[in-house]
Image 1: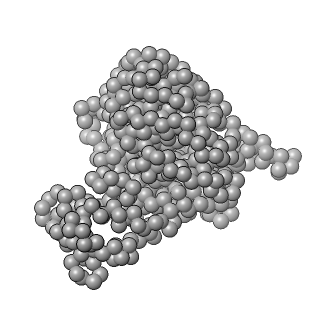
Image 2: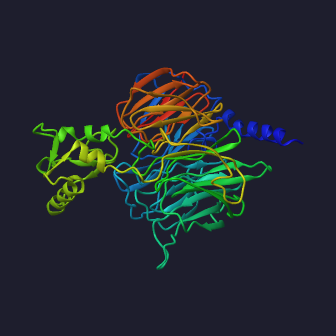
Length: 506
């Protein structure tokens, strides 16, 4: 059998994930975001929903069984719950309360209920960073629980469990170091879904906290690999034993996206630390974002103008006052004055008591890890950074949303509402367009047969045609924030906003 013929079979098998509408974990089949057989509508509005229900806050996406949808939430800011709703009507089927535990500290833009449930034919398994794993049957009866010490994370846990055979796999990356070493307590675990027992556990001692969910990738020899993105590297493991097989360097400190599979490759992405999407970003927006503080209009930012919501900009596409905009002034008066002095000295090179545009733009540094989208061939042993990487792209890389592979193209949406389509064969950008829906994007793209859904944190959902031509087919403002990635059923688009779930059908 020729090598070319084997690769053709493998590439076709890898693309086969598109045909499934099975949405049982974060982003559906193997985290792909694709349900090509779904007949979810391309146009919809709040008043045309099949049903709308109120739900408590949380960032978990919806996982679906044949009749039920499942999610996690936080009630009254303190109670972690798992909720189940009827897919046909939206009626609540059951509610299960997690054991009491101190809530983990999370970033203002995150939630203690950020991880998406994992559903199989018999069970619903949820992960709360504050407690650990809980397993229920589809009627809400608890089958087992597994307390897991909360990893120390910069922003809170958000990785979701995935299925492999009879097991679930969970990434527990951790800031804590072991004893006096620089090695961390991070680890990867496989747990038997029927009982909650550990199958294997693999340390990740060079990795600090991260927020990515892993993927299963077929290999050239007919096997499978578990691909896990983390601080600075993406790793390949044997999913049956947890043995580390390979790694690729070149990613930034903070990694979030799910690796996606297609065309004989796994595609892995991470923005520069601080959310910078381009290797050589346009610096002008960083200065323009501060102009509202130039109260006297002299073209400089003086110390006395560093007041109120003044923030050193890291993500200028976001509004001032947004928790992700940059480095703010502390609330404590003494620390606030110290921070203002520090800001001034940091940038004010001519010591005239103010920032000029030139001083700020010269001060900005973009050496915090190159933004990266890599096409990596599965297989290999050890450091395969040069041997297994087919191409790399360093522009238009999202900070939070994962890429989406569909019909030999990659779709990426980043902050500011910029959609890029990339040729998966060579990494060349096919187009880069603005959606007309700006702001931050946390939800990852999801896709049916001929259109994809893109949801902004502002609550605007944009529907764009797949393919090489940019076409906005529909855009609607749902009126409240969206952080959760939408989910796709056989004929339904489910959108979770801050306080509601919408079911849209043709």
